[in-house]
Length: 381
Image (cartoon, rainbow, N blue to C red; front, side, top):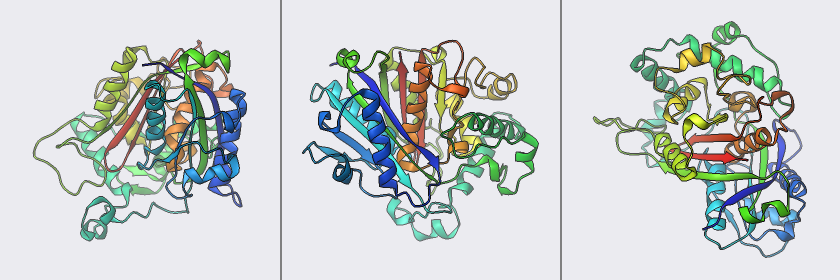
């Protein structure tokens, strides 16, 4: 088994780009990643990629190069990008390939995601009740979490305020206007206790990464970032997840708990060693819950951490330094790779105005999606 390094990154700005297809955004990101690594598409031995709404990733070879490489489409909801990365990691660690590319992209129409309950094995009644609109589920889930851990809902506006503040410092973000916590709390209520500005929005964007065997990394860059651990898990019986049509009498940990523990174990690194973290924030409550589920803090400790400024860019545990999904939006295929792109920038010291001080050395990413899946990575320099 060999190690894996990220030697090239590329991104198309998130948000809305009228007149530019999702495929075109993916090609832009791929060419940027290849240029960053000093490589050509003809050097790639494999590709993994995915999109929910913008087409099949494997067809990008029409623009990138008809080289005959194996290019496999990946589809795993919001964890599509994370899943593609984990597949690439396995392809290199196994010794099958030395260098390859991962691409995630999307271009969603305006409005909420339109998902058919039948695709998840659920009856039409579930959609008729409104629960396929995930804002309803996340509202219920955070209500339960706040109650169980004696947390005040005020913390949700503070989390979103940080997201908008960080997004304003990130030139690749969609939402770049800071909002105060009181403005966020006073926005229209979508699903109690979550207001309009506590949610992310479906959007557009693309990210590509070039990966290689760790022992070859310095052939392509003098600043490689190493993928020390990557793990993906699905839900257990008793966990409470999006698109769940019932609740079990037993309670079980969320898939995030299992995925994060596996990624940290593979890396031989503890959550306490993390210098910068990107955590799924479909809405502000998700960031709150996932902070504890990933092991970065204990359940119920989040409010004190956030109030102290610990999760700010200048804090001891910076979270969602690029603004997260709340500021960037969520193009499903690209979202998990955006997190990795951000951590590579941070570990290289290339994040500009939103750079974490103190030369961060360990980065962590976590993505969560329907119907209860989670992918996590641990990166080092």
